[in-house]
Each structure stands twice: as structure tokens, then as C-alpha cells.
Amino acid sequence: MAPNFLNDIENGKKWPSPETIAKMLTALDAQAFELLLPSVGVKTHEEALVSSFFDDVSKVVSKAIADAKHRYVPEE
Image 1: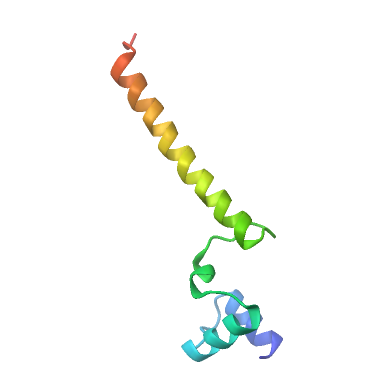
Image 2: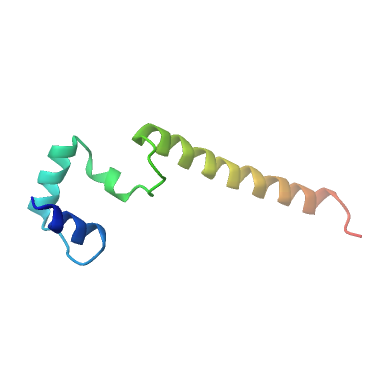
């Protein structure tokens, strides 16, 4: 696969065929779902998953705290 073609894919100028995606996944020793993970610098797959997990947990906890505050703390 030519570097220019990969660059065009990364920049959204070209779309790879399913066969090309399969070849890329094999070369990268990756799973298809990993292509859908958000880009987060140079983190490993595991670091990205843990980061996403903590982001999700943080959102849920923040919402629960806000709901509890709204329910139990009188507004001024």
C-alpha cells in the first residue's frame, strides 16, 4: 500500500475498500472496532480504553452528584 494512499485515507480524501481495511487490520494486528476508537495522542489501545472508561464514569458520577444536589439542597 502506497504511503500517499494511506495519507489520503487519513485526511479523508479517499475511502478504503473493505478488502483494503482487512489488509490494514492484518498488518496492524488490530480489530475492526479499534478503528472507531477516538484518537487520543499516542496512547496504546489499552490506555485509550481505560481513558474512555474513566471519561464515561466521570460523566455518570457528575450527573448523579448534580441530581442529588438538585434533589436535596434547597436553591437559594
